[in-house]
Length: 101
Image 1: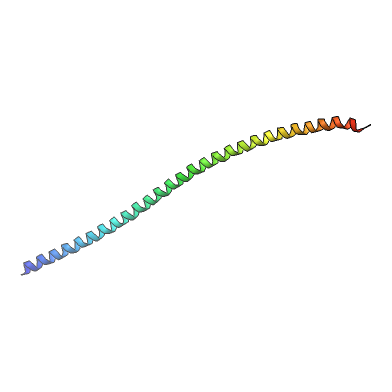
Image 2: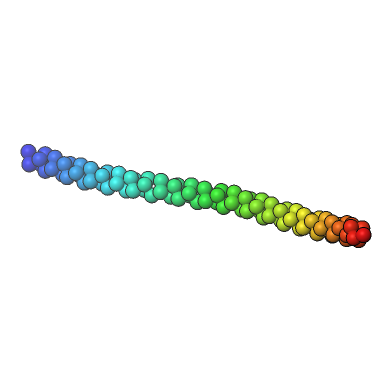
């Protein structure tokens, strides 16, 4: 009878150690899943930042192009206004002598 009790005690101890090992394994698996989730989240965030960076670079290029276009249009308008002012001055210069009889 002592042999059976001893065997049962050994089995019970083995089951307790097995349960403890399973608990440890579950905790390790849970930590690993959280780590993997965090890593996936970090990778997703990095991908989103890369997408934002690309989008911002495209927007910056478009804004720079628009700025160059506006500068060119401004320069052209300045030249046209200068020519128009010269033409008005010439016309006024021709009219002034006739106004003095």
